[in-house]
Image 1 (cartoon, rainbow, N blue to C red):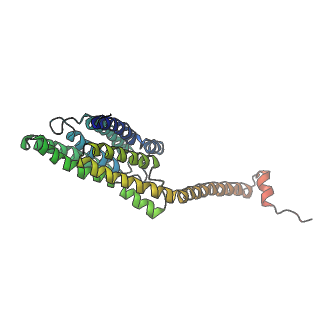
Image 2 (image 1 turned 90 degrees about the horizontal axis):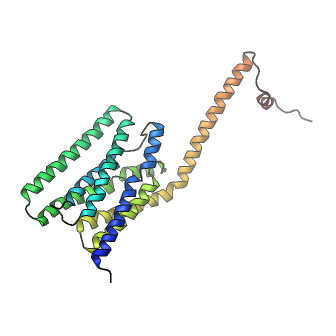
Image 3 (image 1 turned 45 degrees about the horizontal axis):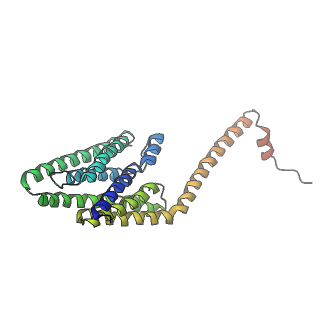
Length: 265
């Protein structure tokens, strides 16, 4: 019979793999940002919240805080690197200096906070249980904030009836990630992992419902926008041809034929 610890380890490995793809899921968004050289209406909050979440969970998994949590350290360490890359790209293609300063200040505040928390826990808390409780409580708060950060995007979706700025991949992988880590924490019950990941599962499920609800209206809006662009191009070209004819230039025969009413028989 398979032991609960073995099942938990397997779930933890699966959680690492899914979390890795969760960290990579914004890649299409940043490829689009790099091509357009603008962040447009994308918000930096999900990436800042995820960075903070990874920092505190890495601290939680340290042997001097919560022993036997190697799988927690590995994936969150990788997450720190990936989120920093995203934030740097956001800074490069940000629309204004004020926004850049704001993002940099948030990152610095996060680093200072985690450094202070580490010093506080290692000097004042002298048992694993107390250290785990303190850091775990902080992790709980920031994990909930990470999963709640898409609320701003969800509000935009409801207001505009468009899911253009709410990537489907991110929502789907978030759902899978929440389910796996909730199951992982339920085997050897850890409330600091169960609670935020349960809420994360619910948040991702709501996002997918919104995506299904407003997908068609999004496609219509995109099609209308493209149609307006094509129409403006036709108007500009038409004006150019009209100017040529007025100035004594020759218009092309198809346009000339279109401008001449057909003869009635």
